[in-house]
Every structure is written in C-alpha cells, then in structure tokens.
Length: 540
Image (cartoon, rainbow, N blue to C red):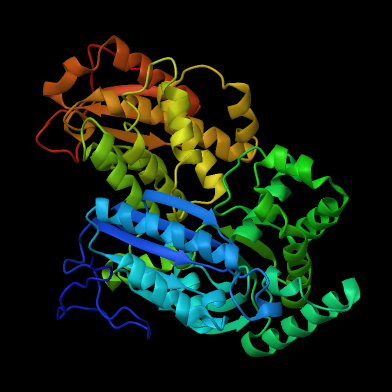
C-alpha cells in the first residue's frame, strides 16, 4: 500500500515554507472540496488517525479515532520507548492501516514526534511499523512540529497573531504567528512525561520550568497579546475552567480564558477530587493524570509571557498538515464562509439561495462592520440546512448546528449569535432553558440583533422561492423607524396573509413601521413608486 502518494507538480504551486510537502493537493485553487486527506499522528502520549473530507478551507472530519498509548512514558529514565506503549501503538497503527486501505486512501501521511525522535529504539520501532503496515513514517524534528501545529492554528484563525504553544507528552513547542505566516519556532522538554522525572520535589520542578520558559522567552520574545494553546492537556485544563465557571457552551475550540481565570482554575484543580472531576467532565484517567503537571507549566507560561488572552485551539499538527497541502488561494479564504457554503450545498433545499437572501437583507446592514456582515452571510447560507428535522425540534436543531458544529473562524459569541438567529428563523416564541442559559453569553444588544436577523430570515426565506430579489426590494430607514417592502408589480400575489404576518413580525423586531409599496415601473429596480399594494393599504 502506498501511504504517501503525491499529486504531480503544477506551475501554479504556491511558494511554501520549508517542509516535507513539496506540492499542493489541488491544481484548481477555486476548488471547495478536498478529496480524502488522512493523517496518522504518532505522539508521545496518543496515536490518532484523522481523515479530512468535505469543506476544503474548514476541516471536516470524515474519520477521527485516538488511542492513548503512552509511547513516551519513562523515556527520560530508560532512553527507550515504553514497552506497553509500543505494543499498543503498533496494534493501533495496524488497525489504522487497514481502515485507510478500506477507504481506498491515496493521500495518507504518518508523522511521529518527540518520543520517536528521541528514543534510542525509535529507528528500530519505525522500521517495524513500516514493515508490518506498508506505511512510511516521517519522524519530524521539534521545529517542524512547532511549524505544523502553528499552521493548524492558522487553519482556524487566518488572522491569528501571537504565540502558539503545543504541549505533548514529551515536549512543548512554541511558534510565533502573524500576517498569516509562521515565524520563529522552538521546542523544549516541558512535556509532562519528562517533568515526571525532574528531581527536587515541587520547588525543583518549579525552578526547572521557570528556567526553561525564560530561555524560550529569550528566543521568541514576550510581546504577544494572544496565546494559542494546542494539545490534549491544555484542552483538559480548559474543560476544567468551564466546569469551575459553570460555562454553558461546552465547545473547546476558540474558548478563551484570561490570565486571572487560568490562575483561579489551577488553584481550584489542586483542591478538587480528581475522580469526581473526571466523572463531571468526561476527561479520561490517562489525560487527567497529566493535568497537574501541565497546570504547573501553564501557570508559569502565563506569568513569563504575560498574554492578555489565552485561546484554545482544537486544530494542531494534523490540521497543519492539511493546511500545508492547500494552495495559497484556498488558504486566503474564510474558513467559516467556506464551511457554510459546503453545508448549504450538501443539505439545503435550494443551494445558492443563501447568497440571494443575503443580498435581499443587506439594506438592513449598511453600517455594519465586516465581522458582523460575515456572521449575517453565514446565517443566510445556513438558514435552510436543518429543514429535514422534525418541526417540533427544528429550531433547536438550528441552534445546535452553529453552537456545536465543527466550524473554524467562529468564536463563542459568534456561535451563539448565529444559533439565536437560525433558531428565530423558525421559532416564534421563547427559548428552552438550556438555550436561554447559553444565550446569556451575548450582550443584550447583540441578542436583540440576532433575533431580528432570525425574523428577517423567516420572512425572506419564504417570500419567493426563486429568490426574494425577484419579488421585491427591502428599504430600511432607521431614523424614521420605517421598514419598506417595494413589490414588483407582477409579484403582488406573493404578498398575502402568511407573508404579511411574517413581514409585520420582522418589522416589530426592528421597532419599525411596516410599509409596502408597488413599484411603478417593475423593469426599473432603482425607482420605487407610491402606488399602494392591494394587500397592504400602507402597513402590512
């Protein structure tokens, strides 16, 4: 089985940083969908297979399986891979090889990190794996590991700027990112398996961590407002931070913490019963055993680098390998909008209607900034993807689509804004208790605007089936508190009872008077006449 096939070189291959991929997967930069791209990540603690499929710019997980093998346990003491970890890793990789063969995978990369590159029996185990599976393993150095992890962050945050910190079982990598590029990269021995072997008790461990971090600071600087955390131990701490705070939205990607919150959570963890915490949070015993050491690293990491905000990234080395294979034109696209386009294409009744709906509603949002407009565009693209859900649960399904889906380029307040808008696209009364709790993450003004967008979607989505712009034009006069619908003369029959009710509800959410007029000359969209609609008499 050829585990590392390549696409032929093309003249439009973008310049890339030095790495083990020389050519992009795509020859067409406008392609929206990736063929299957598989990654087997052999780490010091876990071995994972991920197969990406679907939306090109925003990773979609066709397959995702992980086994905590613990290859790096005891490495510092013995210099060799953990024997039990070797057995588990080999069995796991054999399974993954068969699974990918069953998927007819032609683009599969297997990478190994700190434990494999540092163990004296690493080369021997690598040869055994390649013999038993027919797959080629690439053992990468710390700088390459840092670079790929940082590219994973850029997959979800194209405009991210700051310091990426990726913690594994045996090492911890740092990378500086900004201007959509990865800059300095460094590696360190601050993985929990290594820290278990540090002498001198708590004081010795604290001094060791501090000394290493100050050395890293000298290499990458400390002027980084944002710290992006990659790795299972960081995600576990973030999940515990959510538990301490009673945070209602249990999505780790783009979850943010302040330095003060991190310190409080680390102190809180030390006071808790770990068995009870595992039961409450679903964190595995193997992962929880590494949390106390990782927490000590994080406390000093925040102290030494003084970030203003700490962000959790579920994207790391595996997504970085996917990013490596994207042409530059695809990397430049918005991951959120790309994912929404794909979801519309796959699930909506009328793919392409979302763009028409956005253009129809745009007069309401002339003064909105780009960040808000992209959320409105995303809502328009997603407005119909849950149409197959049972009517009694359709509004909840819409809310869950944005708050729980794997969407890149979307922070938590953005998720909730989208969720409320999509829910109100179907729902006309209040929120269920769990949704109301999550909605509390939005400021009151944004919550009201999301509800208004939902009402707008509700009207615009049913006004005309071939596109609302063919039936009429919206005009909004916020200072006069007037929402006007200018009907095309030959489309007046569309605006009867149900449409009138939804337009009125839409206007009420805007705190505006609803007015309807018929265009005098329907061949000229620029001119609106004053003839009254038979259905309106002025107010719908």
